Image 1: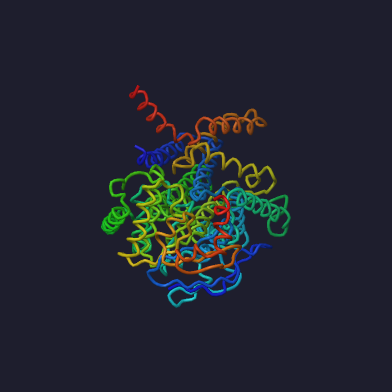
Image 2 (image 1 turned 90 degrees about the vertical axis):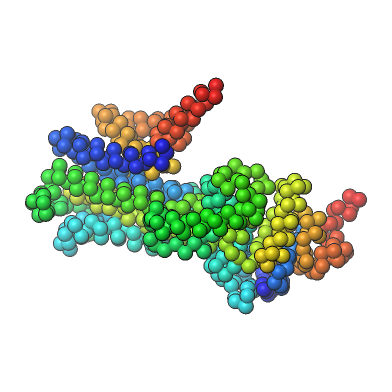
Length: 325
Length: 256
């Protein structure tokens, strides 16, 4: 059952999210759905870093690079959205490649602090570089993908909320599939080995630092894609501390992964959806939201350390114990 | 086979190893002994590449490997059994050996990304067979599918030896391979180490505290104290030397 759970959840996510778009009807619900989809991608890519037992607090930093690079490419260089999207991911990947070697020599809390500093520095650079990023006023009027003619489907205007939702969903699902594919590949076997015993892995000939960098680059690429999708959805970007590029956003992502369960690929998908729904329902008491999320996080960590996706296994174990008497 | 010339390592103000010269011949079982903090592990770390020396050179099979990293040294034929990171704990015994075999698995991009394709499965079966052979050698044939972390201590150590063997190394570095073992496990391990040399023609470097094992196994030992070589030679002869007794066995002699 364990092996199939991930596939099942990905399929279910695909199906439900497609139906949800049809059912939502109004722009408000669609915008919530878009944010959920983007956060699912962000959380899944963050979990990729977790495989090597690193905790990144700077994932939103890469989303910021992705968002701004995509927005600026479209606005200032007149590059089409369709090209800017993969390019912005690639810019993030390149940044991760350059930062990978100095960053990934650090482990655990040191890596977490460093990535946090990176995200904050990037945010402050964006905040103060007025000529490029608009400074505290941010960027406004970021164009959407526009209208495009597709075979079999005719012309589609991706600037409407519903169509943009489906576009986001397609990109997110495609990205998730790529990440899932990597999870199933031999690459992940090596990553797990490096996580278990790095010095031993090196002494059997695995280039640990190269694998760590590769892992970081892949995760950052998808964080950048997530950021770019966000930029063209929001049509405006700002880098206030409370924005999606502030520290709280990083912590929320971390919480999504942990609550969903970091051991399983489907963990962050479930975690993001559950928590974002809860936080959406709690919208009327805005200021208490961090408390609610924090409370749930504490409960889960204390009583269900393997996360929500660990529940089925827990039940099976319980059943076996009951059978034994 | 391995020549260490003028090797020194400094950690800040501490001189861990000072001007060490060692020459290890092919098919030797070579012991590095000395009291705690003598620089044995530091030396081993420099041989396998986890640490780079401050000065000096390390030459393996006529090639200067002083500044190569552990993963490249693994390719040249140096493998190590660690004291702590003995095995990959979230894998089964068989998978552990297969990870050790990974240098020889010849996986192309296709096999890395499509582990379910026919060619990958075929290669996997070959690896499985090789892994079983090694598991039988380290006497874990029946425990192939048990999780490595659940194996008893002695078996874990044996599995560690298996992983190192799987890399197809010519030189094996053993960091206190007998620590925490009971008498029977110790005998088995010592037998295995001797067989590795006799049948697989490996050169073996051992860091060990168990003096009986050192006497029983090694052809040649170097005694380190405060990072300096204080004696070298036949183990039976070395342990009789007064300066060795003073540095290492001193406490024991006093007790008697």
